[in-house]
Amino acid sequence: MKKIFLIIVLISGCIIAQSWNNIITTTINEPNLVQLDNFTNRDGIHVVAQNSNSTNSIKYYRLNSSGGVQTSTTIETSGGAEFPHIAGDNDHMYISYRLGNNIVTKKYIYSTGTWESQTPISLNNQDCNSVDNAYNDAGLHIVFSEYDGSSSYKTHYWLYASFYPSNHFVVNDYADYLGWPTISLSSNKAHVGFHSYGYAKTRDKNLTNNSWESTQGVAIADGNERVQSGCDKLFDFYDVLVPGIFVNLYVKERGINSSTWSSPQLLNYSVHPYLEGRVTSTVTSDGKTHIIYDSEQIIHRSYNCATSSWSDEYEVTSSPGLTQSSSISAVSNDLYIVFREYGGSNIKYRQYDSAPLAPQNPQLSANPGNNKVRVSWSKNNEPDIAVYEVWRKVAELGGNWTNLGTTTNNYFVDNEYLYAPGAGDFTLTYKIRAKDIGNHLFRI
Image (cartoon, rainbow, N blue to C red; front, side, top):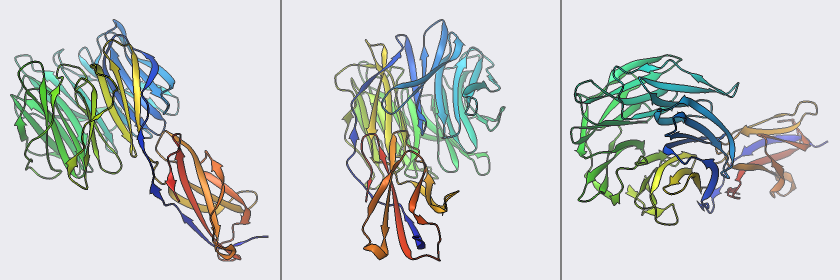
């Protein structure tokens, strides 16, 4: 009987080729689409869509990595719901939107596969022009603008740490006639961006001591604005009007804990400002910040932390044409984009397919029933993982790597060797590597 003297588990490798996959036209038909948002976790690409129907105005769809629709649900049966946003992690998912005199939030219950209504947030007046949300371990953070009944909007912040909203705060230092707030989270802060009387501004909440810092002016701006944290920096993307119907898109940056903003950098000079699909952003595991925006095509750019520079423009769509709405999300180093073009009715999908990250938390144990070696690990968060390969080498038999097989589980039983660490005859090393549906993997 072969017994093990010493067991070593190794998960390592290097990234190989990665690229944009082809554009996929999904079976999601939304001819009256107004706005899209998406969020991705290991279960798939989660899409929320607002349409202009008199009923069933908010719908939810889950796509797999090939663009196939796995499930769909009507979230809001009333007409007139607007500004939907979706956020979460691998175990939590929320959709927030405005409906009449309320900001409505629904939570996905994983144990039952149903959506549960949370306690709504009442608006004092029935007017609101923006909602955004973001999730971390503290809960779901929501920002929205509300008309004050006279001539301007206020930016409100709430936190759902449970079924009930709490931690209410009026973010802007004085009322404004625009608002349009966005929110992004870093390790210990919530960053809120908003438009205030011709300026893009930000204000941070310290999540450690639950206190708000002073408002920071970023730049003179004319409309849409978005904040995004990444690379230990906060980015603020904002529009400046130019003659005609276009705007220039600029970005400024600062350290997460700083109040000093960089000089403006022009990212694009012909962005369409009046579409519902304004700049959307996300961050990948390598720390890069990614944005997409409409400039007759959907354009992608990313910020490289190592070089402190923005990439060149990449045209995500293949032919000129405006989009009705678009959204980007990320898991690990993969990017997921959903959009709908003017003149079409079906939602389209495109993925930047990066190599999977290495599986984490390797462990060895005795397999129940036969005491053979059981190798286990945590499943990757990427929704496009196809299989895991398990490799082994035996030092006393030449130390060459042998592919033991593949599995879709997060464990593998090596039936050749008994689990007997410290009392056996062989020194074994195991490797696990993840392979996605595009055959990208971490190479031995």
